[in-house]
Image (cartoon, rainbow, N blue to C red; front, side, top):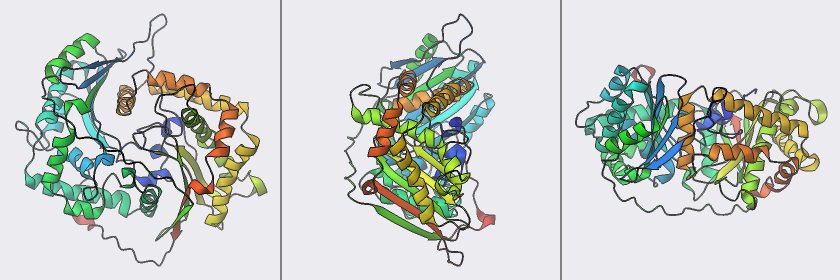
Length: 498
């Protein structure tokens, strides 16, 4: 599968949005988890002009404000990030973070359901939201002269959201339909959901972002309201603004508009550490499907932005990022050449598609994933062996300097193209904040990745891919199998918002 580096860029990640279904791990390029690093937040500047930089402030009530000026067009991206996602849920209420995201569009004391988006459209803008394991984010893009009006709308929603029980009853059916269409009607998505639940045992990443259907069936309006009261405090939120703005003016507006929202104490976040895996795990997921699918998942260290020079796990995280890009970071990378084009050992084409991904960063543990769809006549076992052999080859022989140069050159190019979107700039700044990182993380990360050596890449290939830490998922096609999912009749399906 040919994929650009931009297709791997975050939101994110990590792991990023609910709209990125688990099927994406093997099916859709633009929805595949991170293999390239998130582009650095670097401004494009005219010759002789110094590039503007992002600045971060703390408002009087503890809310964070991040502003990144970009004067190239009279538009602005406005994002409200809340550091709460599916990982903050408890068993029995899976999907509540995402349900709250939906309900945030259902009104305030002064706005009727759906009125928020109509007001944004009247300002000449567009809006949406997403939920991930780590965060929930609400975003708009409006003409820069409408920024103040946009801020007042979002601040009102954040502080005073409310809805009638009847609105929740209707909206939960939309969410169930979202789960049906994106998960239950896709054998690949269901296989990845089951694999994820096997990989993680104690960590809340094991639960699907959209929630288990039984939890959605049992969810109540008060479950969602309680989640809102617990987590939607200014001290747990950040406003990120990128575009045609003056930093001082935006700061004054934010203090006046957002800084007035009363702060509330946050509940303690208890550690939920994943126990050490002490042997291989394997899942065979049987479903009505046209083709098999193989996924190999290894737990890997996450990059926290600390220990740049001396911390071994931090250096390993950077090297694993480069390794994933060598395997699948550009057209004609190693997995495509060896498995799809058939240039590997034996010269046989063994897969229709093959890919690699690595999370790099997030609030919870990360995975290094290899996946492939076996070619006709090729067994999942053969495909699994071919995927492993590419890691083993790098462990034995290393990677060439030419490969490293190509990966790093493409990363540099992605920095330039990314800057065309103020939304991408705001999204990256927000994702760094969610992970507790400063606004210059992008610049620093890119410099660190440029310094990763071939020896470091070979070293992580030798140390992180034992069967002891491997979880394998195989989608086994059974054309005659009777599916148990009960999707809604096509004529009765509610429209999805995402």
